[in-house]
Amino acid sequence: MYSLNVPVPGGVRRLASELHPRLTAFDTVRDRHTLVAKRLGDDSLDRHRERLRLPLRDVSPFEARVTGIDFFERPTKGSAPVVYLVVESPGLFALHDRLCEEFGSIDGLEGDDYVPHVTLARGGTLEDAEALAALDIDPVTWTVSTLDLWNGKFRESAATLRLR
Image (cartoon, rainbow, N blue to C red):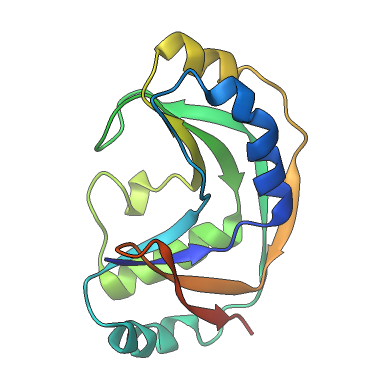
């Protein structure tokens, strides 16, 4: 399964690392932090690259910003709650919408249901999730100038695509 991901900058990884002691109460703590722009499916890497050429041809670099912590009380799949870093980015929403037009959307996860986020942890108590969501954090802002074709099977970037 491939997805198109926004690379997470060092500032976001540092923030996740600083929050780690507060995440140990959860069943699973993420050690790799990703930001999914669009899930793409099981086609080959070459096929995805070809299909992405047209929708990405005139996408310029855009700003993204982590602004806080929130949680999904009832995630679409997997254990709950899911605690995450909130990502605000009009450019990312525009990109996601464009990719949904090209590839379709997954009900409950994409289209109008899309919530850009960086997962920190899952499982555990609602009280722990609420306590984390109440924390104030310093925002992290960056410019997205590349996107990664992420290979979910191997949990690694298979290709990097530069925005123009």
